Image (cartoon, rainbow, N blue to C red; front, top):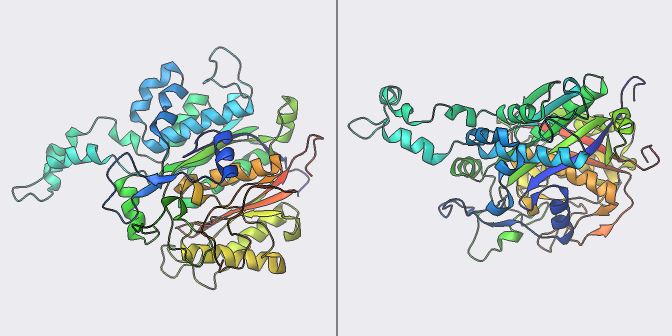
Amino acid sequence: MTPHRRRVVITGLGPISTYGIGIQPLWEGMLSGRSGIRTIETFDASGFDCPVGAQLASDQFDVRKLVPKTYRKATKVMARDIALAVGAAASATNDAGLVTSASDTDADPTIPAGRTGCHIGAGLIATDVDELSLALTFSSDADGEFDISAWGDGGMTNLTPLWLLKYLPNMLACHVTIIHDCQGPSNTITCAEASSGLSIGESMRVISRGHADVCLSGGAECKLNPMGILRQQFAGRLAKLEPTDDPALLVRPFSEDARGSVLGEGGGILILEALESARERGARPVAEIAGFSASQASCSDTVGLVYDEDDTSVESAINNALKSADCSPDDIDAVLPLGSGIPHMDAVDARAIHAVFGERAGSVPIITFVPNVGLCGAGTGAIATSLAAKCLDEQMLPARIGIEGAVTSGLDAGPIAARPAKLGAILVFTTSMGGQNTALVLRRYDDGGESS
């Protein structure tokens, strides 16, 4: 660790998932080993191979209740992904005890606006099918085929004037920065499941080099829509639901009978803060982000759908994250990989764990969460990091769910109940559909003011 680098801690957790808003619903759901995967309710998904998902119930989340009254009109131009990020940010700032312009416009903010940054991972936001269908019905020629001229002459006029603002990936960070008056460094990263991890890593580095004192960081995405499911089905990443299947047991990471994943909606915003800033305002760190690294996989198919079997990019990202945290594999007490249940992606995760940990690979506890909350695209890494931080803070490992049976990877990844554990450091790493990898090392922070 370089002498001039400022230490970065997590002072607020704001995950949003099928369990609800905030860290407590997520933690309780993970401890109980309860899956949120069920039949999709917002539209008829019965024509898809996988008509189930981990959905946030409508009565659990209303973004209008989580923004200032003066900002409620803006919720009309928020796609689901944007709303999830806004809700997560509200939860995170509250958890961190931060006063921002969202909580009190008359009070001075806890951290000056110019020292508050925001980095949020986003996915490929799918347009609302009903909105687009209406416009397309006025864009056909005499034979009923799509006519680009008709679209330009009148079809597109059936879209609302601000329609595009609902679907730009940078609008997640845009709304969050406006609501909380974040005037420091801001960015949007779109790298599939790696998006959140990359955003957290960027926030860490921005704070570490002194360009901000606090950052709202993470990601969010909803893939539970016709276009989102169709893309993933065409990519061969989803488990086909058979009539005899229990949806809650459909995702089986590292199992010999794994056959794909299930989509979810969610993500999270975390409050990353310079240690001296947290100490000055009397905030209690949940955990320290001690190391970060990223890498790009070598994928012969050129689009990152399948990593090459001899690819070492994930191993490289993990080793560099460990190096930046000034620790060795022996210092890691648990590992939180993607664990998607997609066989070829699980194989990538397993190869990296074996390469890094060697003889310890089969005994280091694996934390899985996709069987519970689904594969949440750009929000995946934020849920993983929030969960890892909570594990360190509570000194507990959550339950793992799945089918009893052989684990082909030789990892400690089978079903097990929640249990206490001595946790000093947890490795979180995320592989992705695009071949981008991220690795974070989270270290326990004790009340004495030093990382353990």
